[in-house]
Length: 417
Image (tube, rainbow, N blue to C red; front, side, top):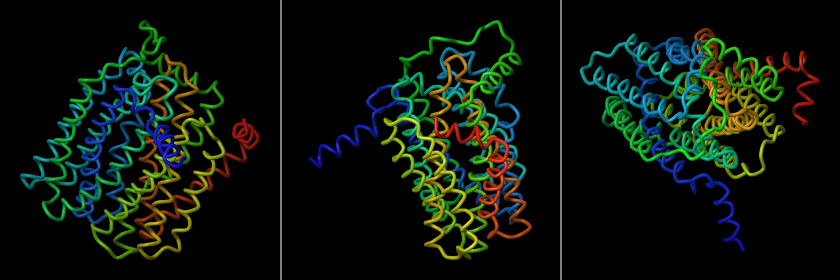
């Protein structure tokens, strides 16, 4: 009986992997994302080593995500014009590979400086502006409506598995072979995605496509109008704007917290990042198992309160074991919220608007990061690393207080619907 229950649970958790196209894509992403997290981990530590400035570490995040802040609607309209999102993903992965090669060469020749990282981060951000909405829309083409929530959760699983493995591998590689090996490893990892895409042939092409006669500005306006007139999408946008701006700054806060509060170095930093990845992985697996039950707005709200509450409690955390527990809970809450928000966008959106709606999701998920990075970097510059997490939690609480004041009745009705 127990064996049957285990098999049933595993079948629910990995339902989308029974689809060949998604399985190929998922496996390629597993390898590539580990390389990406290796580079991101080494990049943050490189910048902090070069500058010794929390503000400049935060500014790299601002630079990386500003292109998404500026161009995400344009990217979404472009994505909706392509019959297959695979075309865009192939090109973005190729140029990601070129970007990581430049990082590798600058490091190899010992000439890398802060402004190099700044420019390369901006290039990464521009590529990601097109890659993310294309990738999010591509899931529908790979698995169709019935498995979309499970596919979202499994994508989060590999992202957070990479978040768990990547920093841990980077920590070992950095201190044994140097940062160069992390950048070169990321360069090689993009080959896995390109190979996997060669074998992917989508079976679920959307029936409705954007009209070819419309101009880009008109497409963008139409997408915004569509979101505004859909209650589920509109409220989801407001909530995501708050949470994603202030709850997703772990990468910026962690190295400063590790050094100033825990009195540690790069190894403590990578330990915290790895456990953050573990919490997110647990959340992603939890969401993949419960995907069959659909959207649950009460769980959506609970995940927000969990994240904000734990961040505020960091006022009292001064030792590594409790800090580890804290980042696990924060990341669990973050990934649970993000999966549910993604599912609301996917399920409530007509096919012909999917690229534009998912570009808004990408904008909120990552394009709002410059604001959060700038905010928390400035707070830590003025008040120290101990203020990083609490200031984010308090900002979430304050913004939700305002949202409840102005939209309390509508928000309550939406949660209960």
